[in-house]
Image (tube, rainbow, N blue to C red; front, side):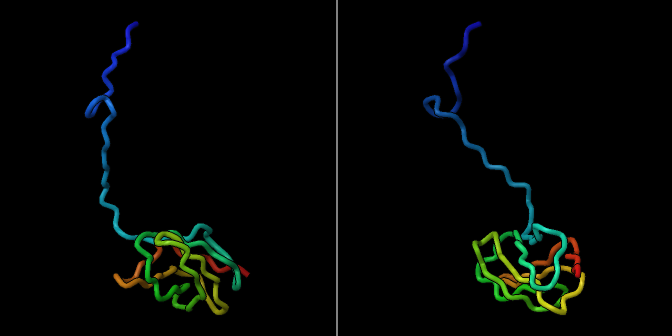
Length: 102
């Protein structure tokens, strides 16, 4: 069997592709549940400049780790519901409810 030397692209250096599937901005928690005082990692897109994080309306203390990651503390008084991150471009709401456990 003889292998071809052609590998694609200019001078055989390969070809770069970009794939866009049209996903919009989102936020999701890494864990699905936690109690008051527990630390929760929130992953998402375009979270730079986030001004608030809420658990079903209850304001949480949070730290912006990067444009795609926030660490938040579940506030006392939070109830089961969506997590919302407010950014300069608008509010991003989780598609699944975060369950508050005791």
